[in-house]
Length: 141
Image 1: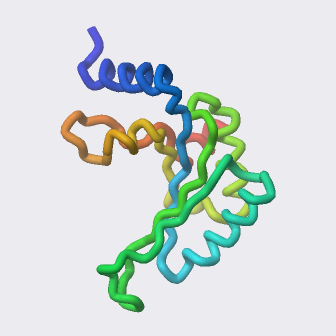
Image 2: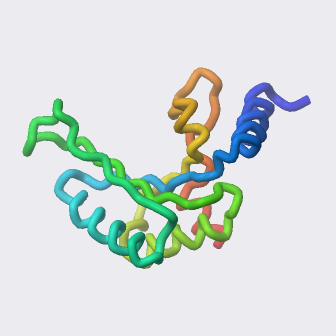
């Protein structure tokens, strides 16, 4: 018998598929001093059709003190279908080629269904907040 967590993951995937919630995103977390450069690269590549189907950047939070805030900013690069692993990996490889992914710290891919359900790391259901990690995907590639 499968653990309850595995059954819950399967149910969420089935419901997402039934409701046509297919998109997901690679999440980058650049520092405030690097966010403009990262966003410029992502926005241009997305506009030129080289990345996913869309992208967004989190703006500065009102509560952050301008220069002293070290909180990273979120940059998302969207793909059309979380189950299209070839496309998900293609976008990751493009991000690597652009110099936005690499080194010790990886990035993570999260399905929008989890975002809509507010599934975060350390949740009470012990669900992984992301579907894929760049380090694991790049090792297999």
